[in-house]
Image (cartoon, rainbow, N blue to C red; front, side):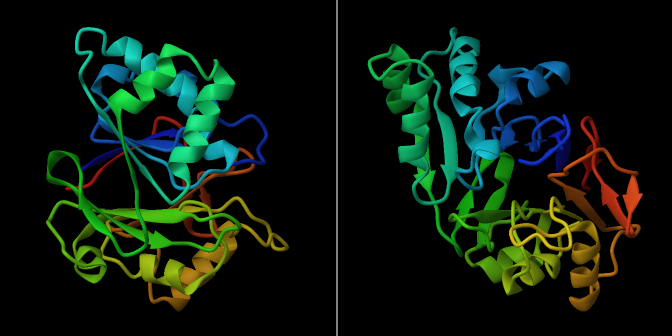
Length: 258
């Protein structure tokens, strides 16, 4: 499994590219407002993307979807019947449809294309579903003001979340403050655990880097090692590579999970 960091910035940030990742070149995680620029700067072909995951409907995670989708359609001109799988929490379809209408017009052909070319699935905590390349995804609720889901990816079929957790390769927490569900994610078998660290000591919506490391230790996770990387994203500002014993990702980073 190959995970490429497209951007690492949070809602509050000092000019960082918006938080997004690409898995195996075909699964896009999050569509921040500047997603087209991030994909272009890293030479990613939109024609290769087959699925999109959006963790929640705050603007820094989904406002780029209309522009991603318009350009994705253009990239598929030779394959007009190709479908794009889009997944996320309850309420995602309504929000994306509204964003598309605001971005161009309610009667645009792109709105019709959204209904025709997008297979949209709203998922809930505990679900395990097949994805691309034999991957399976499992979903865990995190503590945020709107319905928000973390995603766990495995290369083995799993019928339950606990089973998937035992074989997970990659975990992305999305935005969250402390919760027992975050400890559950940290205890998974994933080789790469990527967490939101956009908060400060007084933040009631996000963890800080120091808070994540403290929580990981409490959960029995000792941070980065030879076979496991605990990393932070969704940053507020450019930072040192290592902070509080945590790897802070940057645009262009790539992790090969073997």
